[in-house]
Structure formats: C-alpha cells, structure tokens
Amino acid sequence: MTRPSPRTRSGIAIQAPGTPADLHLHSNHSDGTERPAEVMRRAHDVGLRTVSLTDHDQISGWEEAAIAANSLGMTFLPGMELSVRGAKDTLHLLAYLFDPDDAPLMDEVRRIREDRLTRARRIVSRLTPTYGITWDDVTAGTADGVTIGRPHIADALVSAGVVSSRAQAFDDILDVRHDYYEPLYSPSVITAVRLVVAAGGVPILAHPITGPVDRVLSTERVAELVEAGLAGFEVGHRDNTSEGRQILSAYARAHDLIVTGSSDYHGDGKPNRLAENTTDAAMVERIIAQGNGATPRYPAAGPRGGAA
Image (cartoon, rainbow, N blue to C red):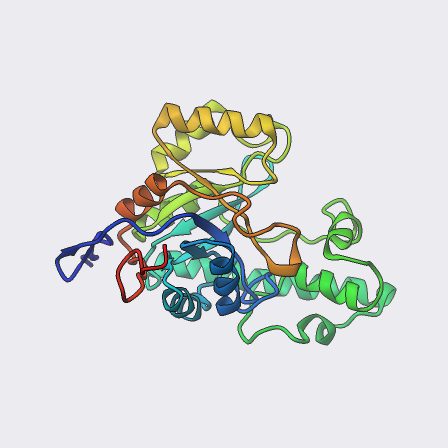
C-alpha cells in the first residue's frame, strides 16, 4: 500500500507544527486517569501546542484526542507505547505515525493486550485471599475497552485502603520481586522496532536508562537497534538517570538519531507533570518527515492553528 506523505495534504506543503511539544501522554484508555479530551485540554492550558497520545498497546483514544487537540489549535501526532523485552529488562517503545491497519503490528499489539488482561486476572486471583480485592474492584470505573494492567490493580488496592497510592502499591505488593508479580508477554525490542518501521512508523525508545547502564544498552546493542530501524531516544524524562541522559545523547549524536523530551503524563496516576520535558521543533519535524503510516492531525486553521 502506498501511504501518503505526512508533509503534504492534498498536494499542499505542510508547515511546521506549533511548539512546545510533549509527545508522551496517557489517558484512561490505558493507565492514565483522564479522558483523552481532558488530557488535551490540560496540555493546552500549560502552553503545549503539539501533542501525542501514547496509551499502552492501545489506539482507541486517538480520535477523541485528535478532535479535542485540533479544536484547541494544537497539532496531534498519533502514537502508542509498547512494552518490549530488552536484554535484561522490560523496556518501552514509543511508536509514532504508524499505520493503524497494519496487520503484523496490530496483531502483535492485540497479543500483548490480551496477555496483559489475563496476567492482571492472575495477579488479582493471588491478591484476593490476602487483600480481598476482586476483579470487579479492578474494573470499576474503567473506560470501555481500556487496557487493564497493574496500575488499575494498584488503584483497587488504594480504594480498599491497603495502600495509600499507586506508587506504594508498585513499590511493595506489585513489585517484580514480590510473589504476586506475574510476567507480561512482550516482543523483543528488535522485533518491535522492525514491526513499527514496517508499518510506516517512527520508533523511539522511551526513558531507557533508569538504572545501571549495563543492564539496558551497550554500544553493540544500540548499533543493532539502529540497524533494525530505531529512530531515536526519549532523553528528556524524569526517570532517566543523569548519566543515562548523557550516554543517550552521545549515542544519538553518533548515529544521528532523533532526541525527544516528554512528561509521560498519567493524570493523577503519576507525579509527572505536563511539559516538564518537551521536544524541540526540529525533532518533531524529523518524526513527521520519517513517519509515513499515518498523518499528523492539524487544526483547521493550519498547522499553527492561530494558537501556537
């Protein structure tokens, strides 16, 4: 299938989208706490003008988010966040401007989402005898079609008074070291990168160095990922270590990769604040130029929308 260039619309060249840009936002279609439209409104209120909704393994919030963003004069970039397997740890891959009808990629996404659901049920069944929470407690108040995961189990534990916050739940009961933990199916990072690229998308490794560098990325591993089509790194993120940011920036310079900065906003689900890290306009332009599976959604008044 021949995909349209995201840099043209009806043969007319598209100008640069407005800035600043925050390209890592979550809604209640995954583990955020606000509807897509509310996320967009809050993003606009803090001065953002280019945004992406990147719910986990889910694209169901795109349309609502795009309509809301455009109505506020913001540019919307379709996106998603995938859980992937690194050499020693679970990683996350941000995918932008991919074809949502690409069968190989979306089949893999469905497999991840289905395993996330059955995994959540397994965890809850283990928690019920000790803490009394049920599957109905976990799903209460969630949006239709939402990707149920550990954050929703954490919310149920908070509602039951077992813990005081999601953070406490993840630090204790839901931690990987605890007996209640269940592994999640996820493709290798190399496989996921190749799937996103084949779907016309732009794969960016999200906040990849949150701990010891040797657990995640070696020089050889980065070269393999770049060869597979990795487009860049999310460098500006509160969870990357200071050393990690420096190393990622050096890798990006060495391979001429895209560098992004994002909030990873989850509403009340995490302390991350909108626009606490942002992406430069030149890097947004590189993402738009490289992606050819879907097009950015520009406001009716034009890419700058009169509000940038």
